[in-house]
Length: 534
Image 1 (tube, rainbow, N blue to C red):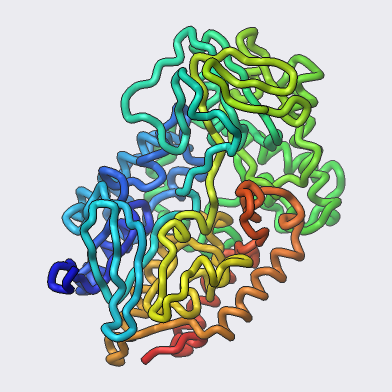
Image 2 (image 1 turned 90 degrees about the vertical axis):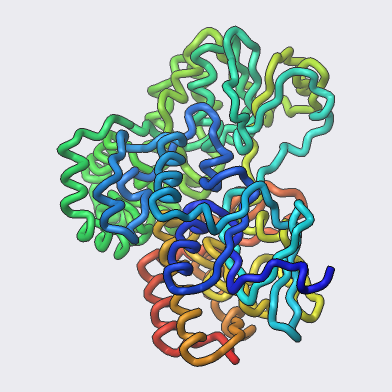
């Protein structure tokens, strides 16, 4: 195809979730000709696709929102403490309408590949529609949890009943009324959807490989006075959360577990448990780094799980004992454990009786066949790298990013990959990503990239690229902090253990959101130290 047949822009942003939308808004306001490309039919990103029953955020609504517009903060009213998928999607659509962002997007268009021409300095984007685009700069705002995984068990295509995936839930209503439902997976999506499915299902069978640490969300409507209180102090609140470890409201003692007596430990844990917050893993500063501190919190949560399940044998199967709390993503739930007190629910531990295959009529384990009308797959994602490597950028030398990341992802600040000029990564490996407030993480990253592009423009520079030595040093730093924690030893999606053949690598920066953003600011203030620009 001739270059004249390729649609050209200054910048292409891939993705229309929180990061992609803000990227379009910020860069367009800065005067760039920018295009967004989105595989879905509308804005929303993960909240467009993940519309399974019970889907809701486990970050407080007032935190899980944009801070770039004071007017937006004041005009949007959150109805619940933890917003549902529908309300979050409504908020994102409101933002798109309010700032007229859809006109800069093409929808129903999946990026299938991209390659740079060093001679022209342009990236060419291939799509599933056959149309091609080019731009000098590309931002991959594809999301760290957006590449769904199937369970890798034979026979899935043989099943003749209804098959639903939490990560790509049908847009039309799905009825569970009177049906025999099998749910595979007990991560966050499973923990949220199972109670809703169990309300009307004739019978629900939950196939669990690894039990989750989950605590009650204590969700409730937000009283007008409470919401108004946040609106009055939003600026101070935003500043406060941006200066902490995660970028969202955090309940912590600010002390190690050993600095608290057993009575104090229990009091603090009771308070967080009563409030309903994932911050229970941050109650003490060393929970993710010290085995003894972790066990204090883990055993507390285990005991609370046992209290919620009537049958002791079932309770023990639901209690996580093989990994420290926080080393797999903990969950917030609304009635999850209570499902197993219902006569229409059964738990199947597939460590004891593994799933052998899917059949035309259900699921065959090593012990028995489960006759099912519907199977729900809540089997997670190829996290952090999956969506980026599905595109697999190719640089001007013909090198693929998948080859560069063969032994694990390497980035500089989680924002750029050496050897791939003018390509910026948002919420990717090497940043705080999934260990921070994703909206705040996205805003900070977009603002940093916007600042870098403005600096390039002011200095009449056309190419910016992470230096290999800076990337290597940063990647070692990320790994060093990660390896000092308890997380790398656990088989989780944090390390890619849920994807067969994926290199095991813990690549999330655990030094703290506040420390990370300060480092990014220092790099910018020092003339984008660690980057080469020309």
